Image (cartoon, rainbow, N blue to C red; front, side):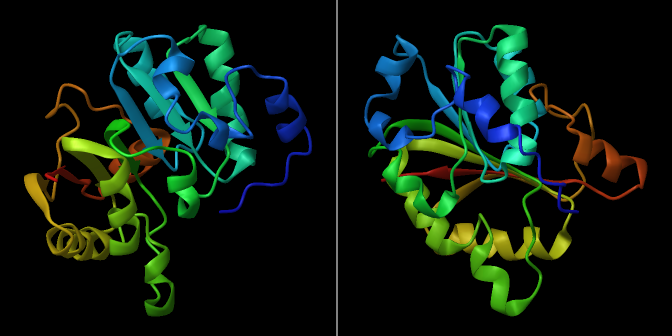
Length: 212
């Protein structure tokens, strides 16, 4: 469901020091931006930000960047950065199509993709965040032996994404078609995941590793 346009979102985020509307200027400089050499984890399609915010609170020794084109959702995530005083989180309202404009080669230690749009129609599948043309871009910005963590409620998307990962040279570390809520210690249950679990929809989860 498309969120109603929030006219305050962009002006408010422009005043937030942790949000970058010109993030391409930070390409290759993200460790400098954070002021340390800690690992950098990237969530693509962060929405309202619960996953990244909760992860950052648990792991202060990891830097997090969340990106999402939908500013109507991202505004809530960026408010939480300020409220929680999370200096290890940054945000960018960007299109994942242009991810290579914002990150240098081998700059990212892990990527998270949680409950992205499944784009079920054949003509739209190339828009999937796990489609091979996206995975090829992720391979450039990921460090060697880094992982992509992927969660979805959509069976077709998950099954076809397994092929996408295989075809682009990723190794499968975890392939779980019915992930238990407490099965993995680092799992964060987002509002989407809670909705699907309450409807008894199995959550699919995969971890895929990349080697140069």
